[in-house]
Length: 90
Length: 298
Image (cartoon, rainbow over all chains, first blue to last red):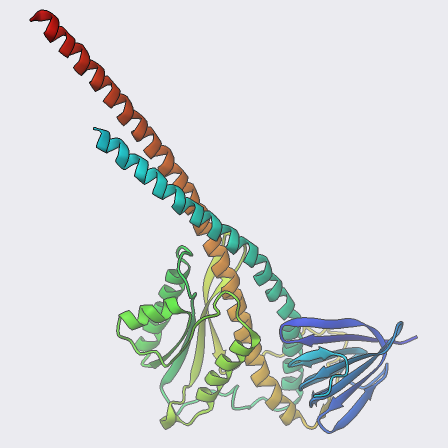
């Protein structure tokens, strides 16, 4: 089964990486949902919650404050200016 | 004669306490360097991701962004010099300052005016002592730079790069920092950060897979606008981190040498003190013997 290779990095550290079934992120013009086989995409992120559904284990939430997201051949890289784990109210 | 011995003893004592200080500083630097190198490693994925994205955006969007184009309207060039806040690091600050001086001389010969930006108190005091103007300085965090500091520096430099010519605008930005090669080698380096050179295919796409056709959101221009300043910030942060690791490595090896030298001095003074004591005893004996001889003869 196709899966996404997700990497979530902040300026000073790598936050999370692993295989995922789906990623949902707050792009500058609305939420984008990424599933395997997505077309290559470079999108800016606004502040909000990045929602990752890993192939195993519980879904993960990360609160980011802007950054960008790139998708290229099922490789998803989320680059955030700052990241907090969980769904903290901004 | 007794005075001589006392002087040696004093020197031994003071060298011993110096040695303890050097030893402590060596250990502190050694313990911090692991952290500094870990930070360099931790920042790598971010800069890789940025570089990939920038080259992707540049290949597909327009590349004539203000940050990538040469300016012709001004003669000023900004130089950012990264030094340490404290000394006790051997030739670390001296060699990076020398590299900066070489760059400044070259740029001046080419007819540029220099705007100096300095991080670290050592560099600052060097220029202050020589009465040379520093446009802005940042001090206090040279051995553990934060992302916030890097962003502040990068934003200031970006602002002056984008400023109009009669408002202190500069046409280029050079960064002089120290590259951490390994624990014994740190190399002063100069890079030209602005205008950016966007190199196509930094991500090295294999020839069999065509460059992916990216979709941009909201648009290629907007993405590039947002990416390039981030890229500059991440480069500045990387320079600061490299310099911090280099500073700690230089301090560790300098303090190690100082500890060894202190040990040598202690050994030498101990020898001298011993021979002074022997000389004193010998003299006392010969004084007593000759005194007794004189009494016996009379």
